[in-house]
Image (cartoon, rainbow, N blue to C red):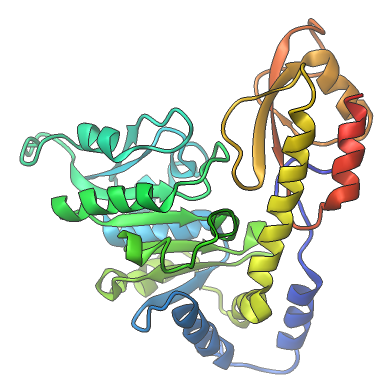
Length: 348
């Protein structure tokens, strides 16, 4: 009963088969293999973006930070939710790869920042002098770190504001497929049609071994991505093992299917949790992760029964059994109905 992270789940067999195929013989290095051309063409097709620039890296942090490095100047502010992954979980990598751009946080009570709050934090046009960080790109996390999903009109509102201000929009799409499954929309509708200029398109959390795509809908922004990737140590010489994963991930809509499985498991989990009076769901749950509060004694019972999940604010094994703790539960593609039911049965 693994609910700790969708990073903890296995790679899908089709991904492993693709790696075995890519390992046969010799292929050109550093992204010049034929599979990379097919990946680039397929992503352009999926996103209805024939001129998009596409590059692969192995981690989400690299994708986000290198993209932002292309979008932000060292003296810029990057505007993001107070819960954003680039703020809490990337070890100052965005600041490092941008040469010092400042993350400027926007209130987001349920993980989603509003265009209204974003505008207030950016400030009035022309209000920032040379003493201040300048208005730089806006970064949107989709799915958010609290489990909520930006609706298309919310993304469009942010995109419209950024465009009116001459700012660019980056989307952290580590769980992009889960968000798309939740919204039943097209990739284009959730990105460039809503004002997104660049996307980190995730595979690692959704059944890949380790691959993310940096997708630039504005090709001009990607002008120095290859140089930044090389200088930052994120260019694989045996790049074929990245492109093989992404090609298999995109084949026959596997990426959509895996996200739908993860979301379905989470919906089953939430429905079961809602039936227990001692469990309180903290934020809207719209994709594949849920935050709850519950008594320490219940946390302990779940863990002793074999469940693995993150407890965010205390030791679940020691302390007042009635004290309430916050837990994060994440469903990956491999979880399945039986394990969710087993977990719920431990609640009694």
